[in-house]
Amino acid sequence: MNVIVYAIPVFVVMMAAEFAVGLATGRNVYRLNDAVGSLTAGILSQVSGVFMLALSLGIYVLIYNRFAPFRPPSDDWRVLVGALVAYDFFYYWNHRIDHEVGLFWAAHVVHHQSDRFNLSTALRQPSTGVFLGWIFYLPMAVAGVPPVVFVGVGLIDLLYQFWIHTELVGRLGRFDRVFASPSNHRVHHGINDRYLDKNYGGIFILWDRLFGTFELEVEAPVFGVRGGLATFDPIGANLSYYATMADLCRRATDWRDKLRVWVAPPGWVPANLRPTAPPPPFELTAVRPYDPPARPTASILALAALAAMIGATTAFLAVAPGLPLGAGLAVFAALAASLWAMGALLDGRIAILEALFVFAGALTSASYALGWPTVEWVAKPAALVLLIASFVPRPGPAAVKRLVLAALGASLAGDVLLMAPSLFAPGLVAFLIAQALYILALSRGAGFWPSRTALAAVLALAALALAVIWPSVGAALRAPIAAYVAMLGLMVAQAAGRASVLRAGASVLVAVGAGFFMVSDLTLALATFHASAWPVDQATLPTYYLAQGLIAFFILPRGSSDD
Image 1 (cartoon, rainbow, N blue to C red):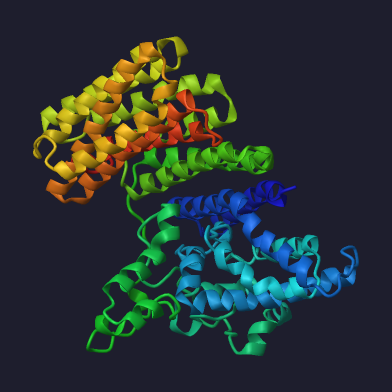
Image 2 (image 1 turned 60 degrees about the horizontal axis):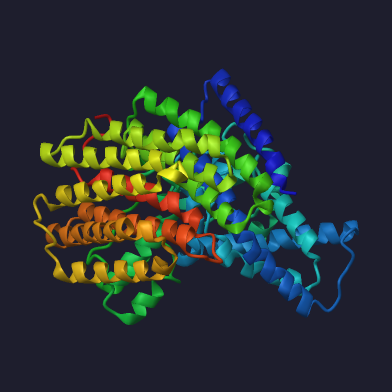
């Protein structure tokens, strides 16, 4: 039983109540785009946690089974209370190291990125913290705390911290001296100089008083992270500080600094990158929230998508333990893509029709994974129709636009034809035409196959893939399949060569999209013509929509999302 499934409705009701109280008292602490950014990060954390739980809990159980000298009963209340206190003690040190070591901060920073402080912030959780967080709790396994008790007290510790993320509850007197409270936790989220790296306790604030990290709330906190985060995309939020550390590591000249980047405190920079003059003091008055303008229709769509995602996530968490791994990963990918689109829409990086394309493609992929053919048959053509509609108003060279629109139209025809097994050959021909049109579009400004190395490498790979499935292909299909594989290889080689000529980020993304086209078709071919122990068919649709999206999104210059 996943307790979070039952907690989600409570979270929603409490956030709605906080919002209503804030409006009634003239202290609204919510902003739509910020709340969506926080909640999508929380949703991503929960759906990825379905696959991560085996790591953290599996290691705990392994240590418990091998090294626990004695094992107290799990139904003894004294074991539960002792384990809760012990868990919160180790949580304090986990939380403190999260703030003091770069590699740990890279995961934890997600929780601090919101510039608002409300109950939605409590749900803004990282998706990568599980990779290292389990280390701190192994003493409990060695001490013999039963796994079921460990999981139980962990949930209690986590759920307790939900209510302390609010500005609407003031100081609580003596309670604040012993327990983590809204006042104490506002200090923890503040970026004021006096509040940095303070008040780590999860349930008990006594640990901070004992270890010298307690700070009383004496001035209004300013929330967020220094430097800010200019996105509502939960995937980008999770990767942001990892990218920062990777960049510092790349640019460091001393090999010791290349290693130190990962364990140094957040904000540390290698010696060769430090400014000669001391940095100016941090100015709270200079902090500005990230609040890009968005059309009302974009905000309404993001809010509707959030409601749908909360329902879909609740259902996924309930049924995920019974899903085959391949289907579960496909649904996870669909949810993650939808969360990305919501954030990118609010950032102004994609248009409404582009977001709807991502939603439709995600729904198609999830429907196939879950065995919902009726939904798939409706959503599949809708996805390409939306992508075509989003591409029509894009600025750019008219010849390229016509070719890409024709390629997308041929792809739409191929999608519809391939839904009927008896029309496999006509569907293949439609996609062959689409690849030829893409080659013509990609040749504009770069010439045909400007990189002979890419051409040779891609065609060799295509020939290898064809050799794998060839024995299982019927005689009537061998010629069209060979022609299609050759045309696909030529398209991928054209995109790769174009990227080598243009040397621009957009052209590289188009080449990546072309590569995913090959991956998608390879998985389809393996599923159709080659017996495989792996559920490769589950990857066909996600990689197909990723391919079409990357090509259509980036083959032309990108303008405003409102275009």
